[in-house]
Length: 173
Image 1 (cartoon, rainbow, N blue to C red):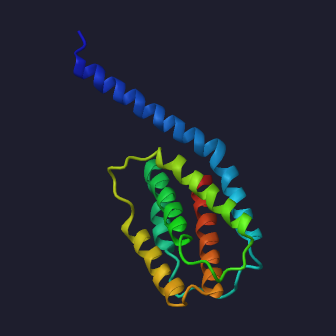
Image 2 (image 1 turned 45 degrees about the vertical axis):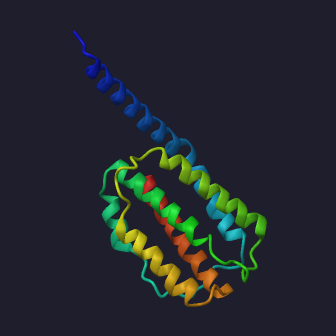
Image 3 (image 1 turned 90 degrees about the horizontal axis):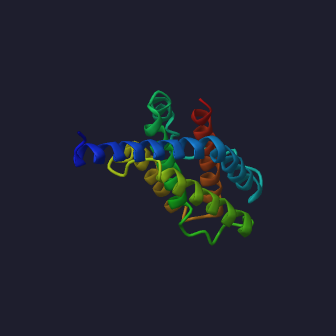
């Protein structure tokens, strides 16, 4: 005989599996397309990507660590990275000369990607602290220190492209 508690547990398990299936479906059928779209817009919205290096080191070791993580941790990391990128682009952009429509489309697609990935992960787990710290440093040492100049935004665009391309690598794995 099944108790109400066992049915509740069974129902939670089925919902959890449906959520994972929805997430797998989203990543398999939509993530790559949107990723290609926002990377293309990122290139098109401005001129050539700068050759200058940002004064904040790219967190390569963090990505290596995530490469070996489980599916949900990778999705959470991907989602947090996209969220941090959208926060960066929420700053003072008066000095940029980028195509406004392409920039807005880029940010809208990132937001869509974020919202769909957010439904795939448990809100109970905290995001990776080192990733948040990296983006705070990028904001502080590039945008604020360079007074939100066009040059600072070009560095942010370059770093954004590096992150989004790197996220696609472990998506492929």
